[in-house]
Amino acid sequence: MGPEEFRRAGHELVDWVADYRLGVRDLPVRAQVSPGDVLSALAPVPPESPEPLAALIADLDQVIVPGLTHTQHPGNFAWFPSNASLSSVLGDIVAGGLGALGLSWQSAPALTELEQVVCDWARQLCGLSAGWKGTITDGASTACFVALLVARERATDGCQRRGGLQAEPSPLTVYCSAEAHSSVVKAVLLAGYGADNLRPVPVRRPGREMDVAALDALMTADVAGGRRPAAVVATSGTTATTAFDPLADVCAVAQSHGAVVHVDAAMAGSAMLLPEHRGLFDGIEGATSLSWNPHKWLGSVLETSLFYVQDPGPLVSVMATDPSYLRSARDGSVVQYRDWGLPLGRRFRALRLWSLLRLEGAEAIRARLRRDLANAQRLATLVEQAPGWQLVAPVRLQTVCVLHVPEGPEGPDLDAHTLKWCEAVNASGAAHLTPAVVDDRWVVRISIGSETTEWSDVEAMWRLVERVAASS
Ligand SMILES: *Cc1c(COP(=O)(O)O)cnc(C)c1O
Image (cartoon, rainbow, N blue to C red; front, side, top):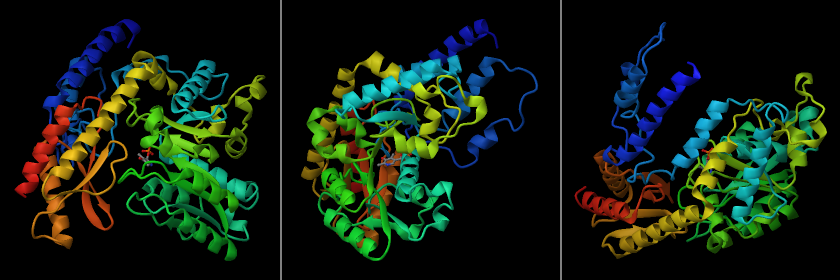
């Protein structure tokens, strides 16, 4: 395809995307397909000769769109907001169009330096001190894994360059809230600590934040037992109920036992843009590393996850490689992002966040986040006033966890009722919610914050939920 043909096809596809966004409200939120439906509708063998663009668009319309759960739909209240703002989509198109190769500073100087700039813009917007240096990764899972690799090497003075963890005399331990994200557990396993050395710390009620006295007791017992505390992963905004671990106290306890703190603020990090919510992150400056995902609530296209460290030195010393074909005369004076994470060839990810921030402006983004927070509070009030309904946890940000308790069912029967009405709402196609287990009980999370969701959409969802639950 030459540039002129691309111009024609590109205009057509941009129109197609705009039409999709204009019409997404009229589609069912949750994909209505069964496993294998998409598979069987697609050509099983690749084409030998070129097909017209129209054939591709026909498949997009008839197979791909019906085969998706529409996260950009105003009735999407599932998981977490996964906004792909169109201003960010434009940056993504440019990244593909430039096809830059981020191997080293020299292979794409602007890719490296724009990443430095947008990471620093985001830092400033969050009110974080100038000491934090950032990079863009694919997700918070990767950031946590990398943070735990660095913690492992710090605690063992670089065991990977000797016999690795296998040659260590005593086990390293890692701590996180019992309500931490599954990616923390995965990172502990993959980084070689072993499941036996992960300590889930109990949470306090009603806020469900990490119990720091329990953390202290666990660390003290581990040290007495000959183990070495390496890291605490603190969560700012847990997945089920948006609980905030008390960072100042967590950092103080971790430090007293010689462990580092990684903060997982994947979802809630966007709230740092709002000065009135920064109190939730008090003490964050005492952490060693931090991750949050502008690809969730903020609106950057997926795989824009920020990973910050207070000191790049230990990170680079664990991640650096120095093959001869990548060396250049500039090496000492520039940032080499390949040494800040796993991949060598990196995409021009910074363009997505840069175009979002430049074309929207921070003020409009803050206004949207505040809209969502106000909508969550309004919904919480409706839930509290509704007979038979309970709020399961304090509404800290934009997620409202609810339970419908009619006369009669208890225990497993109540769980069955909850799962039944939630499934009925999701099957309707008008709204999409996620059930989750809190204190061994199924509840339903209503996560507000799709870019297109206004109060009228929240209200319509709630009326539907009330109606469906009453008749389930
Ligand atoms: C979404 C989320 C994650 C996982 O993030 P990915 O970018 O999908 O890897 C981890 N922790 C928390 C608290 C999250 O909300």
